[in-house]
Image (cartoon, rainbow, N blue to C red; front, side, top):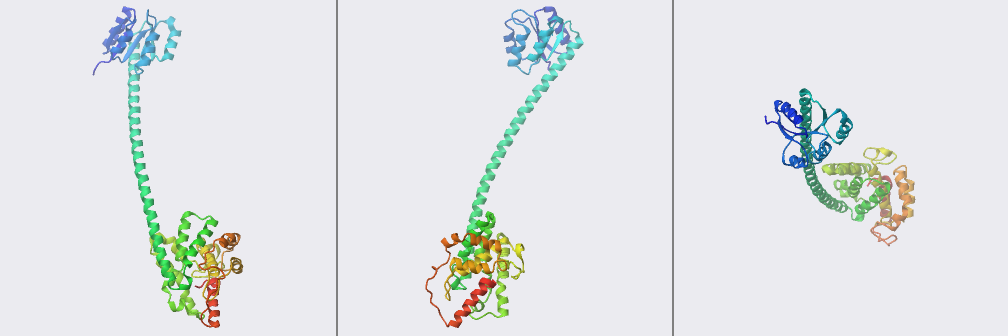
Length: 392
């Protein structure tokens, strides 16, 4: 192993030589110096691992040497040589950063043990600094990787958000096409799906539902009658009163709609909303006979909006009701067919719906009636089944 280099600074030659002999026999490389003004240049131009310095010396004393070493070479330990009379100064030296002190006369054993401890401490200090540096470098590398990964994830997140937005737009376009297919079965309810969407979203907003729920509600409102595609036109457009068997067929449309929509993975929630939008608050509805809070909230919103739009929309057999008249009719079925809390919300915000009429034609616009008066009465009866019995 390469010998470790030690600098001995003392103005007394006999002390220097004694220490040098002991250290040399201990397998150390020793440099001696009498100190003086050239000591700092000596320290600067050589690579020492340990400095042993006397306290009392002319020109430059041990405290000045200690201060210089600690300031410029912090990892080099300094041992202070002192006599019994210099203990106060020695304590000051320890405060300034001296590793230990050696009291004259010094025994060989004590000298070698102290030197060994000082060099071991230096090695640990250097090793710790090296580890700290490596840890800092490693942490910096990790932080850079995390930052890089975060940037990649943020980029991917933006891409996914854009893809999701595109998918939602595509879904909505698909929904619009399906809605048009629904309305093509009944020319007199054209615009109903879009009005339902607007009314339901407003009610949902007033209820404080989440953004995710708003999206599900919007799609369900437009597609709530999708199942009518599976019902024969002869039944849907029948002027006369429906038979019990025909009425049962009509009730199948909520299950048909649920089955169609459930095939779309992103519309699982929407399919359940559609399935239960004809449940009555008192449990008399279909298909599950659910009651009260057991009915999905969004299905209850659609039920209220469905009746409200039916009453405030123009039909070929009668003019639309005013907002107040429609609300009066809705009150009659609140708590039985409709959720009373949602009905009350509609009533409390009637001014909004009055100012934002969703009917396709203006209220009180003259209509052309076709057929006999008897047929008109039957048509009105069909309307009542739709609004109050939730059958169409």
